[in-house]
Length: 364
Image (cartoon, rainbow, N blue to C red; front, side, top):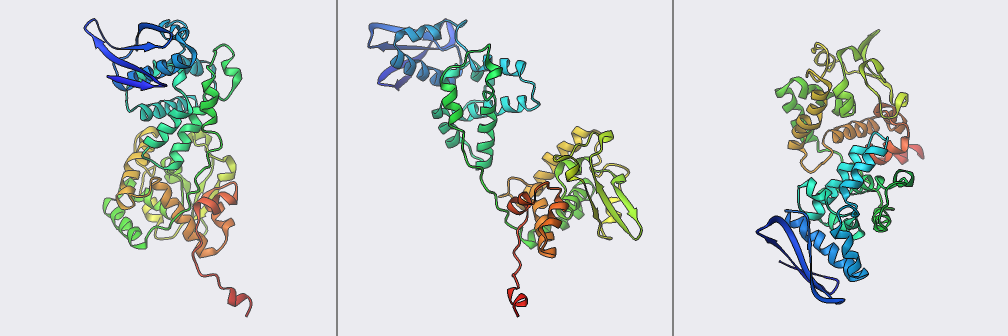
């Protein structure tokens, strides 16, 4: 199979002696044919590595070929990942590694993580970023999120004092710097769709119904719903309220800490449905199963009605915020209802005011 790059032509092939792909090519420095093992059985990875070898030798000469031939001196992506996981202490290190592998999988069209880890670090270039962006089928927000997390692996020089990174890593990181965060202005869900969702949730009942009530009308996050218990509903004088606060004894930490804590009164018609449970609103045995229900089952159900909305359950939370804003006209009330530390977050992403502004009444 022919590979052309940097004015040179090579061929990748297999021999009967090894299942791994090999590369052969001619270089202007010598008339003798150059051969090197690509160290992988994956064709997509082999093509990528062959191109890197050809480009490197075209730019630096045949001396650079020794780096690919000597495994002990060639730093791979897998080597970098293992070093990063060993020296980094941040909780998100595994998430960052998974994001980098996700970028590589899409850029090279393979799901073989082990083969990708064997690639040299020199493949991490702005061109790889471009290939990933072109191949990613999802939203701009997800594209940016994966690239930012990939860049975070190499962001702190102190972590890499004992591990020499190639020069191309700086260019790879720079290719994701300054990418604008997409502003996902919320578009209200059609009332007919909301009515269908309400009827469907009633028919299904159980956890789906309660999750719908808590996200659609109270604007709770999926995490809060997964942790929500019957005891959160309290009777106060002539009404029932739901109390959402950090609860260390239940391992519940809110995103913005105490600032996200709030108390909301409940509509009388909703109270019997919430109090019908024995304990957790999502009646599953473990925290993992309750979270999985919200992330998979409930989101899948929501997408049956709004398939064009990727954030699923969060769309119901935004709908609740928009409804409250239109009912009260006060962004501060919606901010408190949704538990945001900053009202600009509420106004920018979570609540849309689409009522007619009655200027005539003010200046009559």
